[in-house]
Amino acid sequence: MLDDHSHDAPVALDLPDDDAGRKRTSIYQPEQAGLIFPEIPEFANHAEARDYRKKHLVAACRAFAMHGFDYGFAGHLTIRDPERPELYWTNPMCVHFSQVRMSNLILADHKGRVVEGRHAINRAGFVLHAAVHDEYPEVMAMCHAHTTYGTAWCATGRPLDMISQDAAAFYNSHAVIGASAGAVAVEKESGLSVAQQIGRNRGVLHQNHGLLTCSHHSIDDAAFWFIALERACKQQLLVEASGIKPQLLSEKTAHYSREHVGSDYIGWLHFQTLYNHIAETQPDMFA
Image (cartoon, rainbow, N blue to C red; front, side, top):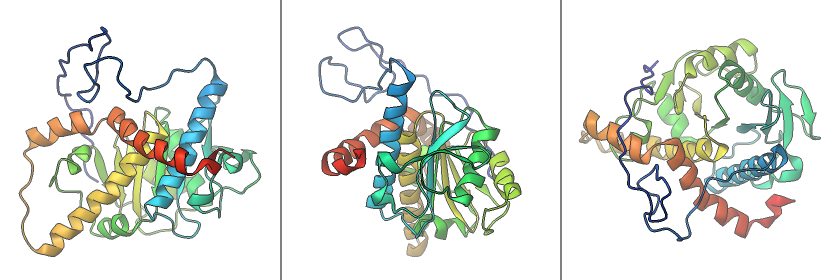
């Protein structure tokens, strides 16, 4: 497994407040106040927070459909319930990502029992996600799907090379896991062996299986970095196929890029573009 270095020293961000005196935590937040720009919401109660999380979970499933991440019934996305964090919301079994909506989401516990909803739970999803959520209470959301490029690159058993600013989002924050490689993850022991190794990594390359992403922040963050991880695997495969040895980022540059364009907040921010598009063009998601 690639060592987990996600705790290495962060890049110091000395950003001026915006001109209304509000603190900025990202270089992408505008200095000029009053402009239209996504803001992380605050909620008055658990019901509001739950509604937000469910809408964004549905949008994440729709985004996976848009990117062609479907493969039969394979693939599962989860987000903890804000009031009962021992429970998590997930997409229903045997429902295409494009058909997931608010009304068919299911709420499950870590034993795989459906607490709310009419559909069955994906057994592999329960094993993997429940193990991670149980092992790491700080993990808020998780994504997995059987994608073409991610599965192909995972077969190499190699971590990503830092060949671009985009790949640097995963600098010292992704792991190659060989445990239970290629096995169908339907047994609890399989999920536990993977969960114990995920730690604080943003992305996981599960050998002979595929990609997983986790977030301490939101389903938005986990979903966007899954999309980005699949894209990074595609780029890596293209470079490998060219036979030309790529120029790699320096460790300093990769670290700097990860802090500025690879944070949880940036993952959330990227996803707002997808969420707004999906909410506007696919209003049935709210049904």
